[in-house]
Image (cartoon, rainbow, N blue to C red; front, side, top):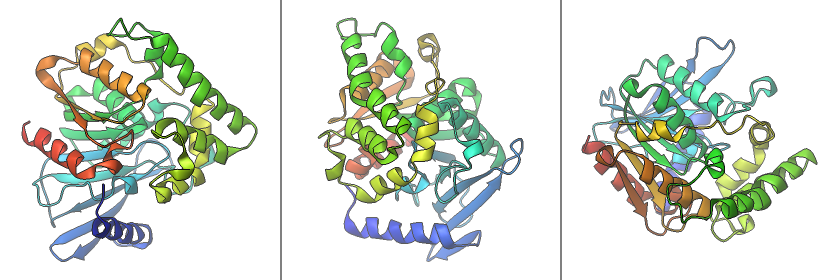
Length: 320
């Protein structure tokens, strides 16, 4: 969990990110860079990146991909400083601080993967380390499967690959049908019904309830991010009311995926999150992947035990 000085520091940096109009701002021996990247191929669309690191840092790029409806600020200070890596937190064009354009809202996680490709192209990056959480992990995995030659390593936490609930699990003793019913009854159907009734805040709280261990988002321990999630329900609404929301991933592609991969899980995560990460652990080639379970952590593993996540990530990156 964040210690107060780090959390306060990043809240301050977050304000600077939103209001600064300069490309770089010196902070002692650390340079904060806030960039807008105009992406070719989608007129009028800008993607955002945040870099925190030493001035003129030239290390291997590590791109952090947040899940919807969170944004690059939700990575906090996980961006490694003084580690030799070039750390970049990536923001989608319909995420904070950009106002969502109703005509550009996503209808599939594939949209996120396509935007990630445009971002990497626009930043002229290559041989990147990708770190994704939730929908961000889903997008990073889709991108990595399509562009394995451009990915040096992949770190994922609980990508919500719902189509796998319609397939036989790697662990044949697992009751996937029971879990599918839980996901439908406790999360998907009530959330979609709330969205269709125009009760967007209730819909987002339903999502938080499902993915937070105690099932009560009103007691969520990260209220700032929760409020941001509730205030950006348009993105989730467009995504989750679409029949194309969750693109299928053929498990044979996972079995043949030889890019070094870290599956980062929370010990207190939901049954669905545990199922997805166990499937990945069973399917990925043993020689090129590892799974690390972070203690005292839920689906929001990077928030619950940030130091353990950072240590696991850096150990994994340094081993590549």
